[in-house]
Image (cartoon, rainbow, N blue to C red; front, side):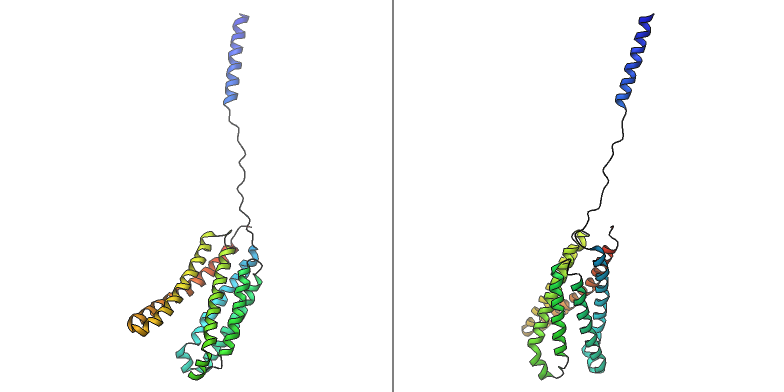
Length: 233
């Protein structure tokens, strides 16, 4: 009888050990943490949003300096030039404020200041003779503007690497489109001398492309500011 009780107790003990071996204990999972970016999120969110509004001001002011407005209302055209120059100078100042996050912003700011200075030089230019004399200044201004756009776009590409890689790539691709449309305008102008119709069509297409690039720049600036503003800190 005692042996039978011992056997039963042994079986119960074995089952208890088996059950305890089958028990699963929760394993603590490491918490997922957001990678901390190497840039000042708040600084970029604040000032890139200002850049967004400045670009809008510059584009509106450029409408006042169009040929039709210049011929119809010269004072309005002058006001547009002054607003554009002031906005470009302020744009450069803002770029300097965020230059600590990417040195490309500093280079872009320098280009803004040079372009603004050349624009001031071109304000007195009115007739054809003066314009011919100012052609070298115009060419230099165009080159400086291109360099400024390049450094700014690449600056946005750099600071977005740890925040939004997709948007970072979009800025890089936008520079390619900007350069492509510029080269098409030059090519179309040269081609117009040989084949006027085809050359004009190329220039027209490139002009439309330039407008699209300008619109995309505004959109990307807004998205960039939003990306930094909504990034978890």
